[in-house]
Length: 82
Image (cartoon, one colour):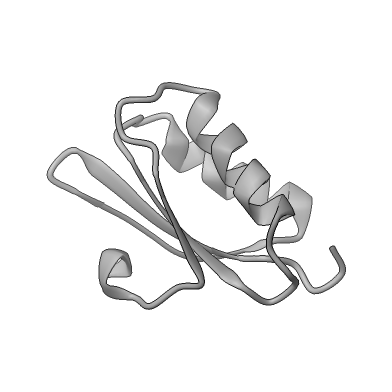
């Protein structure tokens, strides 16, 4: 399960609604170096589509996406070319 993976950075944006979870994740990725990983936990159900589309469009890799107990867990890997 993604919340048990060891990542370089983690972000808890529970309680924030669209577009804030994705915006905070983008800001965190911008501070990271290529190849590093970011785990995100949030409570916004709309984030499932948001994070999937963001990964496709940005070049970052969505390593995992999981939902449990009303929370959504993501692990993103920063694109090598950014």
